[in-house]
Image 1 (cartoon, rainbow, N blue to C red):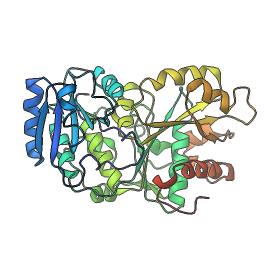
Image 2 (image 1 turned 60 degrees about the vertical axis):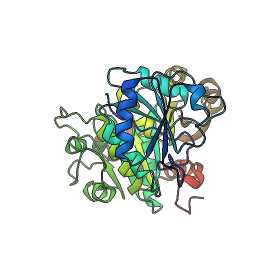
Image 3 (image 1 turned 180 degrees about the vertical axis):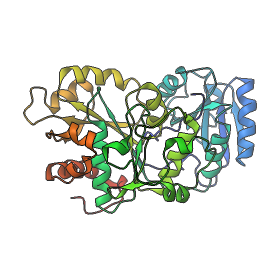
Length: 373
């Protein structure tokens, strides 16, 4: 890992450029680490901003609210009382998973691992000084293996595209077999994840959109199905891709996967996360464990199962601790449709369209497409 992992904003407003208020060039860094201070000084200077450094939470409290952005070092374990969450937790390569656990505890919006994330952090701080509109990044993951997260993600993307939104479906799981297989788009021309392995820094959203394949009315970025996947894509590259996607699309649906690595790479850049859970006790237990890996963003359940199941939505919601946002229809032949690439055909069924419309409606003002009622 050891790179930048942009996270969701925690407010669900979809605005990644809200780090620096208008007219404020000051970045507050809270750390007692001389090495972190030296690294961040160089980065903030490259972004054209002014850096103020505080050695601890008590000193930082006097400057916190006036700062355009607050960066907290990984040596800090507490924040001033009644202050907004820091924009970025800044740590060092080698600190491992503890950075993401600390970020969740502090409520940090993003994580930057230095020195690898230096270019990422400078680019974002610089761009945040000239804010622009951004789309919504919606993550979908399964509470247990085989929950149907990929199916739900495809159907949501398909429905949003049908309503006229600019939609990108992102395959976040290198071990998932490739979203392109489920939508029979293996031969569609365009870039896949391995083609972006060498991308660095800021990615132009128009160029990204023009380079991606299209199926079902939406763009998609998939791991190739049945091809050599030995080319690794760095987390900083994935962060840059999602950043460009947010600026180029109205809705970005990320099929995250359940492994720790894709969760850390993609979940932290989501504004909201939907957890697909079959109406089963074992799935509920697995979902509770998975929630411990989630960033501090808004999350809800998509229950998969027939109405009247023994473990209904209210029981699942109570046991997992998340509200129910929709019910994924239980259809015959879904597994076969995934294998044969007919998932988009099932997405045209009335029950599926009603499910996807309910999810899109629940996004409210964050979903900039009308006519969903």
